[in-house]
Amino acid sequence: MPALPARNPRKHIRTRKDWYSISVDTLRGFGMLLLILAALALGYLGFRELERRALERESRLVMEEDQRLLARVRGDVKAGDYRSEYEAGAQSLQQAGLEYQRRNFRAALASANTSKKLLQSILDALDLTSTGGQARVVSLQGEVEYKRADQANWEEAHNRTPLRAGDYVRTGNGGSAEIVFLDGTLYTVRADTELIVAPGGARGAAPAAGGASGAADQSIQMAYGWVNLNTSSRPSQVSTPGVVARVRQDSEAFVAFDKQSNRGRFGAYRGGMELAAKGGMTRNVQALQQVVQTGDLLSEPQRLPAQPEPFEPADNRELDLDRSPSLVLTWSAVPDSARYALQVSRNQLFADNLISVENRVRPRATLGLRGEGIFYWRVAAVGRDGNAGPWSRPRKFRVASYHGGGERPKVPPELDLDDVKSYGSIFIVAGRSNPGARIQVNGEQVNVGIDGSFKKTVQLTKEGWSSIEIRARDRWGNETVRRCRVFVEGT
Image 1 (cartoon, rainbow, N blue to C red):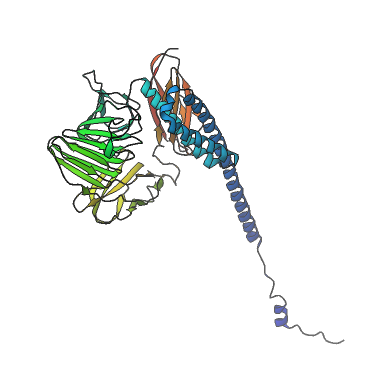
Image 2 (image 1 turned 120 degrees about the horizontal axis):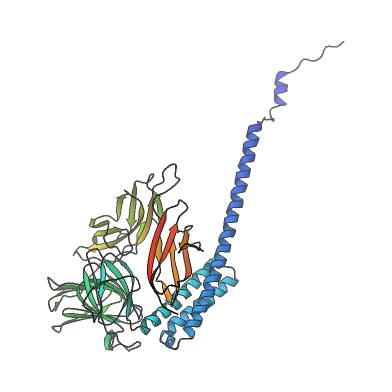
C-alpha cells in the first residue's frame, strides 16, 4: 500500500488565512447598536413630526385669533387713526396664511404673532383713549409709585396702571419702570426719578420747520432723575428745569437731570434731538452725541462711543452650576473706547444689579457662578473723556444645580405675563414660560406652545376685586407662581 503523502502545515495555514471568527457576544453587540440607532432615528423623526403638528396647531390658533382681532379693529370707527398699524397687521396675517398653505408652519406662526401684536396694540391704544389715559405702565421693578393730578397721596404702581395728563410717577432707589404712550413712545424710567405726564398734542400734527415738533404727540416734565426713550413715528418732548428737549421721531435718546447740582445730560444713540435752554441757547444733537447742561448754559455736542455687540455666551444659554463654576462673557471691541461698563441683573430692567462696574479694560469678563437663577447682562463702551455710549442688547443665561446625578435643578421656571385683558367678567391671561413647562390658570391646565407661550380665557362670576393665579411647573416639579389682581364688573 502506497504511503499517504505527509501534510504540509504551512499549506494548511494558508488555506485558512482569509477566515475570521466572530463571537456571538460581538454579534449581539452589533445588533443592539443597530437597534439603538434605529430607535434614535425613529425618535428623532417622531419628535420632528410632533413639532410640526404643534407648529401647525399653534399657527392655526393664532391666525384664528388674529381674524377676531382684525374684525374688532375694523369695526371701530376710531381705528382710522391707526391706519398704518392696521394695514401692517392685515398684511402680516395674509402672509401667515400663505406660509400656512405652503406648510411652512414656523414662518406662519411668526407672521401670525406679528399680526397679533400690531392689532392688539391698536385695541390697547383705543381702550386707553376711551378712559382718558395718555400712557400705561407696562413693566416695573422695585419701588415705583404714582400720584393722580387731583390727589395728594402716592400709590403703588402696578402693571397696566393707566396714566393721564398731570399724573406724577416716581421711582425709588433700585426701582425702574417702562411706560408706553399712545403714540408708541416707550420710556424706561430709571431709579430715583420723578416726572409728570404732560398734556399731549393732537395725533397727526405736522412737525415744525427744522425737524422739531410744533405739537409733540406726548411730553413729560422731569423734576429729577434719568429716562431713556424710544420714539415711534411721532416726535416727543422732555422738559427739565431750564431746558426743553424735542426728540425726533424714530430716535433712541436719554435725558438726565441732577437737581442738586442743576446739571443735565441730553444724548442721542439713534436719530437726534433739538435743545432749547431757558437763557436762549440752542443745540442740535445728532446720533452718538450728547450735550451737558449747566444752569442755563449748554455745552457743545460731545461724541459718544458706539454700541458693543455681545459674542459669548449665546442668548438663553443654560449652565450646570456643578460643572460650570464660572462663565466667560465676551463682546466686540469698540474703537477709541477707554474701558467698558458691565451690568448683571436678575431682571430685564437692570434695577438693583448684582454686578455694576465700569472698569473693564478688555472686551471680556469672567463671572464666578455662586447660585441658581435667570440672569441678564449687558455692556457699554466708555470713551477717554468718560462719556458712556449705548448699552448693548441684553442677553440672558440660566444657571441650575443638578443634584443626585443630574436629576433635579432647584431653579424655578420663568413666568413672564402680558397685560391681563379685561372685558367685564371675562379676562384673557397670556404670557410665556420655559419650553416644556406646564401652566395652570386658577387650577386649570393650559395649552402651551413649543416656545413656552400660553393664553387662557377666564370668567369670574363674583363682582368686585378678585385674583387670578398662574402656576408654571417644570418637569422636575419646580414651580413659579404669579397672582394678578383684577376687578370684575357686574353684568
